[in-house]
Length: 255
Figure 1 (cartoon, one colour):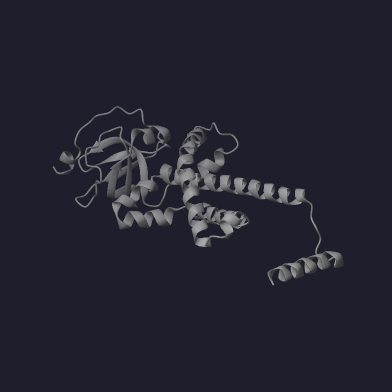
Figure 2 (cartoon, rainbow, N blue to C red):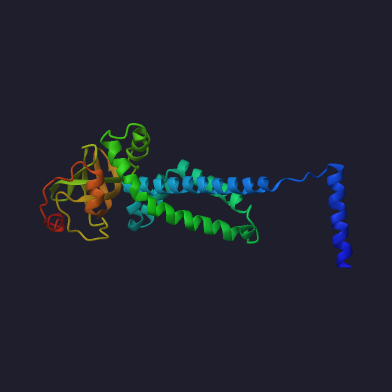
């Protein structure tokens, strides 16, 4: 019975070929098709890794990467400040990659949710590993040493978020300090008992910090402050050469 069924299928196939409704293709056609799909997967994967790593770098350079630890206000600032054009671009590339991957049987046999999660996980890991390379491009762009892509990196990295400020402490006073950003612009930061310090209050002149707060009349009313590592400060700030004058600033704020 099974042999008869198989014979019937073969008969129908040969009849379709004879009638011209189905054409036979040479082996090289399928090899070429597979090669093109593989090249497409590689190119789209590289594009996704680049975009994701660039988004991470933008968040890092702007200081937004650090603000979620300040609570719901920090998470809200992160959501609002995301470069949504790049995020949507990454999502579209991921969907394209899903379509390309499902051309192969190992992916087609699995639920689409599994392959999507796998792609997102792999691309996220790749983006995280590639993100540090963008920091050199940002530095070169701010120093006008990146002739072709300089404007692109400055365009995404220079405009500060609404309520997040990154800079180096240039001067302290009783209830706060001044920070100087990468463009040598000074901003006054004031502290209150409600200001959160996730990593402690021991700050000094020359420290790179990120500040979350409301800006008005040239002054930031700080809701949260944290020091960021010296590598971050030296890679993005022009004021990182300031002398270190270690002291516990909370003693001054409480006087």
